[in-house]
Image (spheres, rainbow, N blue to C red):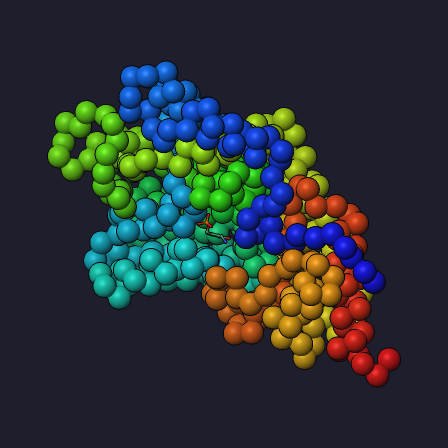
Length: 392
Ligand code: PMP
């Protein structure tokens, strides 16, 4: 089989391509407005403020919160670090799901080492997801944060965030934090319905914006409890020497990534027009098609969550072929881009039994096609024929 054009199936890392308007708006903004903040009294300054506010309103609409509760950052990593490094103290306990990304586990491990924070992992497996009964018994009044990865970036396992939010209603002192890096824009999210206190998102994945964009929703009651990660200029007259204890200035300091946010706004407009629900359905059908196609290949093991909790990602391995080899053959021989290894989430692999070798990961976005999903399956089939079953 020959494939000429590039087939990009690494949407879980960053979405590509973007809607045309994302490139156009970022380019136009850079040429016509160009500045980073609304610090001045000239008209371009007002334009920046307008564009950033509209992007804020767009993200807020997707999350069902107020625009003023949205803070822009460079991505989900910075957002999660802000929460973790900004509020945990010696002796605090944190309960996390078994499928967390290093963006959450690494700052936590650092705090465990340096500040004596205790990190506990919920019970669960790929087949069953998070064990909610065990979650209930693991929670205590001292649990400061309960953190859950909404959609696993390794397996596409969707966490039952509404049910977890329901359980956490009995623990008002516990911050319910959700890592939505893989979910916002790709499936509906409602921070009110799920009782979420902090929601970290990427702008460059499901929201279809440029790299270097992202943010978080933070419930107003937490603003006094979570210190900023960075300190600096806001352009707003500060009554205090250290920072302004108010959104978004407490967390948005220095020159903003305004080109990126202008592009992100176009991504949000696209989702508004097309609807997240339609995008979700499209991604779901591609994921199912790829999973079904790969399932028929001899010597291939699929690592699938239950079908009703599976979204966007298919992880697999070929017998006897290291994930890197498979990914490299897919690229070199078929121009198909997939990821290999641990995908920055070793815990998730431990929970699924794929540690330390990891998996090959194909991930889908709204611009992938049925033909591309089928070509992936054919290409993997050919690799399996050549390397896994060479006698046939
Ligand atoms: N959490 C998860 C689940 C992710 O998949 C990623 C990106 N791979 C991140 C956090 C980090 O996101 P960002 O690249 O926006 O910092």
